[in-house]
Length: 215
Length: 300
Image (cartoon, rainbow over all chains, first blue to last red; front, side, top):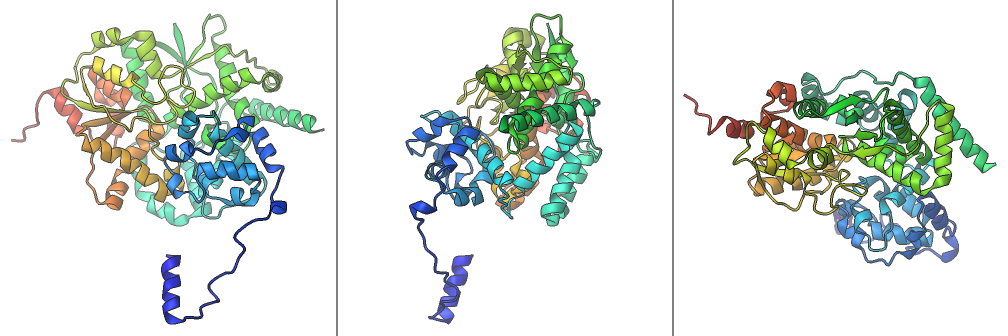
């Protein structure tokens, strides 16, 4: 769409300098985040990341790579080079549906899905937010729900996400929700486990251990 | 042998029909099961994206609970029908085995809340139980209404077979094929067995997810399939419930029945459809009923 707009404005005005943003298209080496690759490799438990041969098998195996702004192969290379902001702002990280096709096919045994998880964690904790991608909102809401109740309740979860991101979707999916509800397949009840206290304690002691490790 | 049944969240809501049919089939085949006491969510794909340590401890809590529940038994088998649960439990077990430092952390945290995790539990998929524990012979003996002439396309989805499955080939899984061959059906071979259906992206980014489901449905239609059988609650949901949206978007008329494999197996075992949650489907699977009742429906 942008391109057609651009062409249109060119037809009207030959000196349409105001719409063409002049931007440097390369990055100099001192602008890269050199520690990024180590951080991600540690977080994804894979030094194997360094051994990528850039064959592109992952991108070929990926069912959603043609929607991504950088394919998985590029992402791996960009992580190694230290393009931190580009990687964490990319749609790739949130489009990954965790189908593990790349992980199975990779000839070097890199666990690419786990790298994506590491990038997701990094993006959320670093405050990188992709405004068009409710996937990150889904992840954080799911997390808080399980944290509090021990179980995930699909109805309230979806309602919350749609209200937070795109209320139009709620309207669009109302009929589907109704159909499901009539067949007893969805409810607005919040599910929870009996022993909520023990679960909280469990997660708390996990936190404590992490703090102890940091100190 | 007693199996611990770990339902997971989706088998209690959108996948209710999976639970009903699975348990009905278990009873019909005399498989002894008991539901896991006070189980919690496995964390699925979302928890891993926020905090990995907590994701592992959540999954390990379920394993520890299973070990406690079957304390005296020699072997602890935990059946996880939802493929996300199955994968997460396997991943946790494998990861903790390989990283003793994290294992100690998880064990300490569990110990503080009164549980003990030893890593003894075996994580099983119902397909694994049917094919490897029971065997095709036993199943074909129990079949009351053979599915002769029904063209079945088995769809396994991603996480049932990838990447940690203990009983399947990662590229060409065959357990569901074998199961329905034993039930007398005609198996249609296809290339979409383990292709991704779009998973949770259907709820968040539909522009990406709907084409993924469309490709699978279209391929099945092209191969003149009567029914697609799935082993995952998200796959079934995406392929069935979004069919009208897909039809609208791609201007097609797909109308393919998508059943849980346990539902179709249950019908072949002669279990009444109501007990299998057939009434919870969006449309009645007429093709299947046609075969089971013998010949076409004739309207007078």
